[in-house]
Structures are given as structure tokens and as C-alpha cells.
Image 1 (cartoon, rainbow, N blue to C red):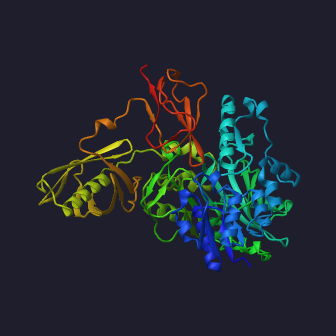
Image 2 (cartoon, rainbow, N blue to C red; image 1 turned 120 degrees about the vertical axis):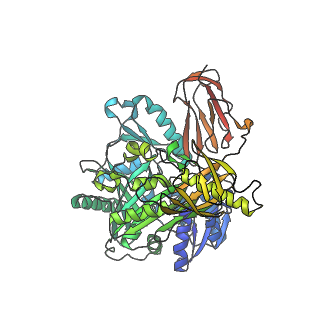
Length: 639
């Protein structure tokens, strides 16, 4: 019997495992870096052990420290979660050697699948269909497009799409660097990239008594940077014979390596219906909640059961209904998916959906870890209902803090290609990102609500300095758009320029109620420094987002805050990991030419020249840590 579990992980997955442990009467132990000392998963655990340092290489990737922490805290089992050491056979063996129960597959099974290159050889011998690898040294234009992939790990790290042969060497270098940083293994390989393919996977669960469950399929085709964004179960629009083929292949894969516990076998399904083995993840997947919702299971509880040596039932529960999951990231999809940092002031969703999150109100979103804030999961009897439910919940969510991908998720779920499951493929964002992130909506009425709430707040705390009925002006910025709100509050109510059809019903510091073209609308307003968040219920028949974030602009801008034209500022805190070879001040550069690379949140981010010109300043060097807004380079387009 397992009595105390240490989770060798952090954030959302640590909280997820702790939740099941509490329900089963099992005590919990957290390990944490210095950056996570105040995190909610640490405070929710019964016991916590510090791992000195902040970087993953010094903390969550130190198996020796984690085993020592388990011993010190009296844990008798270790759950690895996902990522970090979850697929490290050496760590699994060290846990077992310390006399602890390992809540995962045997080290030999992990080792068999640890390298994707070796895993493909093993699966070929087991009769599982797969793509043939490509020798990068012998690749030709006829082989394009190609996909560079890390041999170890996953999550889109160490993965690069190559569409031009000349870019292959650079992408190999970048992929190797990312893979080494994320997994401690810089091995990569190259294989054909299947255009128009779907990413479909099978959840498996196996015990030590010869039973293997294949718990249906999941579709994970909507991906950014080869990392999943929206997942669903079961995978829609699959012919019955193809679904059965995937189940049989997953069963063969599990039995070929004498698998135990939860795992996922991933496939690429081509447009003509052929399936190819991609990899096997020997751990719990991020998207496991959709399988739990459809099958009515707790996969963590079943992992614990298998780890205790207990048998599974002969047959798994039958699936029922449909579930969809969206990953909410602190990132800006319109700015090349750049991760965002800062304080998360509020994260609240309506009832009726499942929220798995590693953060809480007031947490700081930093640069050390993945930018995922939460997973939002909706279940319903049919796919259409589940998609509608999830989109509505995300639309009504209150998310105050860094920029997120929330609007992108809502638009993706309502896009015709997504609502038609037969049109799903991994190229969804390549085709539609520009349209999904287009900023054509007018947030004027939301800015007006912000100004009226500000007026009410000033009236409450000290009163107006001018006559209340005098003209008022307030300017807000949202992205590149400025809203100059000019209004007057008099005995006859609101008079606002540019808003002839708007009537003020009530206004307070936190809520403004307006009648807009005869429709009553309620706007909730929250301020955090110079940032103003305005949320309103959705209005049918319009694509205007119902949540806007503005920056209140000062009446008299500080001239010292201006930057030199052509300045490239750090879009996020991070570390300069590479500068383009031979690049020096005075060089001529072309528009889009890579200048340097920043590493933040486990990913490398390319900084490119905004226009053709002369590089007049390059004040950073490899290894330098920078904050948001740090000057990285200046390109003078006139020189």
C-alpha cells in the first residue's frame, strides 16, 4: 500500500496528482525550486522539500536531489508527472534502487522508448507502421518538407519544420541546442513532414498481469510550434477500421516492451487515411483529462493502483460523449507566440467546465518554466455541444494579467475548419493564424466604460477637481490602437463624442452599465497599475472580443521614454544564447535576417532585423540575461 507520494514535478500536474492522493487518503510531498517557493502546489502539499536554485537543470532535473528529498520526507513512492524526469530510465531505476515505488513503467520500457530513433526500430520489428528517417547529409529538395525532431523528450522542444534546404543546417543547430537544454540530450533526427496530416493518439493503461487497456483515441492536431493547443476525445471523423488499426498498433507497442502503467502511443494519420507511428510517451499526457471525461476514469488513481501491483478489470469502461481541452498560455499568438510574463491578477472561469491549473490569483508568471497557465476541459453528449460549451466558458473567463491566447482559442473553436472535423490537420495555424489574430475589432465602447469607471473612482476617492459636468478626456492604448475618450457627465446624463447611440444607466468604480443601440450591457472594470481590464458578457452576432485590456496613457508623455527608431527591445525576460555568427556593429543586414536568439520558458526565440539597414548598435553578448524592454540591437534603415 502506498501511503505517501512525492511528485517529482511542479505546477498543474503536481496539483493534479495531489488532488487524487488526497481523495485516496495518501499524503503528499512536493519538491520545489527557489522560483517556486511560494507556488500554490507547494502550499497544497502536506510536506515540501526545497531544491536549491531556479533553473530546471539545477532543480527538477536533479534526480539525485529528488530521491534524497523523498527519503528525507518519508515518502514511499514517486510520481514523475510529465516533462522533466518523467521519461528518464535512470531516474526511474534510482527511485526503485532507493526502495521507493515508481509510479510509472519499468525502467526497461522507458529506455526502449526513450530515444525516438531506437523506438522506431523496435516498433518496425513489432509490425507498427512508421515513416522512414531521412539522412540530413543526403537530403535534397525532393525530400522537402522535412521535420527535425529531438530524439528525447517532447512538448515541441527540439523540433523544427524545414521548407527550404538552405535552412536545414541552421534548424538542426537550433533543434540540438533546444533539445540539450530541455532534456540533457542534443540528439536529433530528420523525417518527412506529412502535409495535411492529423495527430491522433491512443491512451493505454497496462498492469503487471497481462491486461492492456486501449482507452480510445484523442485528436491533437491543433498545434503551435509542434506543441498541442486544443485536444479532444474521441478523435472525430475516423473510419471504424482506422480506429481499430490504431488500437491494435497501440496494443502491440505496449506488449512489445512489457509496458506497465499509463502511456500514450502517438500516430500521424495522412490525408489518405494511412497511420504512421510517431512515438510512445511513457508517462501521463498533458491532455489526459479528455480521456478521463469520456471514460469516467481517474487515470492518476489507476496509475497508483497499477504501481501497487493490483490488476485492472478485464475491459475498460465504454466511452460516452465527447470532451475538448484547450491549453491557456501566457503568450501572444500575434507576435510569433512570444511568451508573456508578469503578475496574474485574476483567473476565473464560469461553472460547468473543469479547470486544471498550476497558478492562482496574484502569482508571478516568470521565465523559467512553460507558459501554460491552465487547461480548460468541457464534456458534453456530442462534439458540437462540447465545443460550444468550451468556447463559451473561455469567452466569459476573467483573465487579468499577461497577454494570453484566450481570444485565439475561442476563434479556433468556432472556426469552420474546426467545427468540420473532416477538415482537421496539423496545418491549421499555418493557414489561419493571420485571420485568427487579426485586430480589426473596435474596443471603443469598452474604453468608454473604462473611462466612466475611472471617473466614478475619482469621484468616490476625493471628488472631481473640475465641475462634474465639464468635458473630460481619457486616452487608452490597446496594442497599436489608441482610444481618446471625450465625454461629459451632466444633469441630462452622458454625452460622449463618437458614441451617439450610447446611454449611461449606472456607473461605479468596478462596474458600468450602458445601453448601446438599445441593448443593455454590463461592463466589469478592474485596474492594476496603469492596466485596465474590461469584461462584458458576449454579444451575439459580433466577433468583437468581450474582454479588453487597456493601458491608461498619461496626459503628458515622458520624452525620456521614447526609443531610437529601429530599436529592437527584448519582448520578454530571458538569456541571450546565440548571436548570428560574425555579426558586428556596422554590418549591413536585410529585413527578417536573424540577429540573435533569446531563451525563455524552455524555448528559443529568434530576434530578426525589422528592416534592411545598418546594424548601428549591438549592446548584448552571449550569456547575458535581459529584462523586458532591454535594448538588444538598433537597425538604422536610413543608413
